[in-house]
Length: 328
Image (cartoon, rainbow, N blue to C red):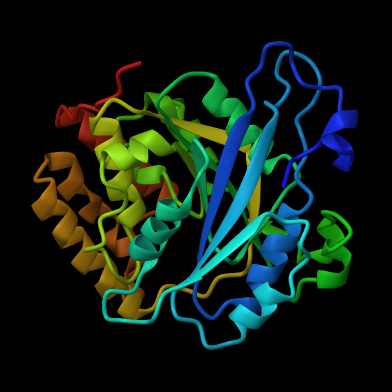
């Protein structure tokens, strides 16, 4: 599918900046028993368009969407088979095993990707119309970028699929109840993601993008990570150590379905993944991620807000002499 401005055919669009190369994007979405929210996510991807006119206009792009089904049993396969054909959609099913998880699923999607730019999403996100244009624009600003987009949290409630079929409509979704906590962190630190030595920790693959050649060069996601948490931070850490730079795209917006609180099982998985992360990368700033445990553990009360803890993480990592590994 080719993204167009105002949903016009490419031949009628007039906003391509002179001399700008076209980008092909692969959007990778892992899913597990999320048929309804996945359909809303895919509907929102039908309505992508170019950015505004002028020097900051979004780059022209085409895109494919790759759904990796991690063993669903809720009718996801049938929903995909009936989805409108105007989306360039590829679907692959992975039988459920004890190695199932987001890392394995995203690697399976990466193996199918044909785009030079890889965008990662979760199945419970609805994307705004400039979502892909903004990711493409940020990457056009320089090579080797790792881009994290903005995530807005929605209240609990249903999504109106019928309205989403005709275009992005905020009224088809529950209201936004919380903005992206990283923006408050940037204000506290008076730093951008690019300037942080712990920026890799804040690249969340519910909304992120990477040059495909960089992902392939580091071997993609580490499939030792299973369960909940940190497979995205570890990937970003390796990329940054290899010279990538982290950037935040506030206008590449996803709206996230109301999420349930972290459970005791999820916290145990996070702790297990952190222990492996530290074994693989025995650096002080990696171990320092333990500072987030009180904010994640459902049986403990955090000593401060998430952004307070994240700010302390950054300050302490700097005192420890952490090297962000970022080389423009």
